[in-house]
Image (cartoon, rainbow, N blue to C red; front, top):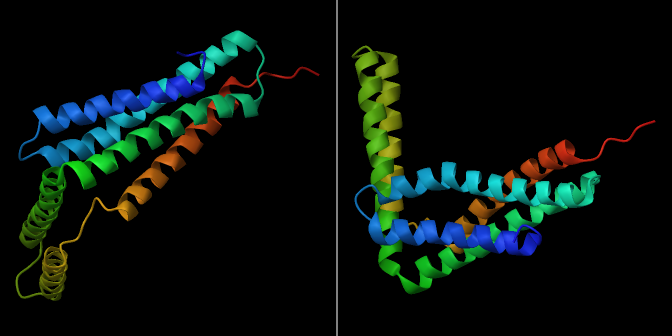
Amino acid sequence: MLKNPYLTGLFMGLVILLIFFFTNFFLRDTEYYRRSVMLSSFLLPLIYLLGALSSVSYHKKKKKDISFREAFGSAFLPMFLGGFLSMSIIYIYINDIDSETKSLLNHQYIESYKNALEEEYSKANKIVKPNSEEKKELDEKYKEAKMRIQEKMRNKEDMFSFRYFFYVFSAYCMFFLMLSVFLGAFFRGKKTM
């Protein structure tokens, strides 16, 4: 599998999909949104790193002396393919197959936004002196944030639309680029003069 960057990318995509479906079917509760965000933030980059690292190190072992371009390509290609495959299937699943998951995640997103606002407001309220200019400013910002939340709820903002998936995938692609540059620089052959 490590011999072919396409298969490595396919394998990474399948691992990510297994994690997604396991989380979706067995860990779907009141913390589902938070858990999904944590997995996307910490576990997925680790999977991408391990896949890219194994692909580049195999390529380096096979060829001994590789250029930056070869190392970059053998790191980027599997990550991009695995990310594109998994994000595409997850998008199709959430938007076309299981609309309950989409509704749950959107609802939990709004609730987490509201809870974070309330928590931040209560902490800031304890620090600020009553009847001060800071208190008035805090209350004004709190009201504005509540209005933004109400607007999101009224508009039924969809955090799992194609546009948002595109933004997330673009952020992952930036991560893939940075990691590929690092691995390309690290694994490239040293030229002696």
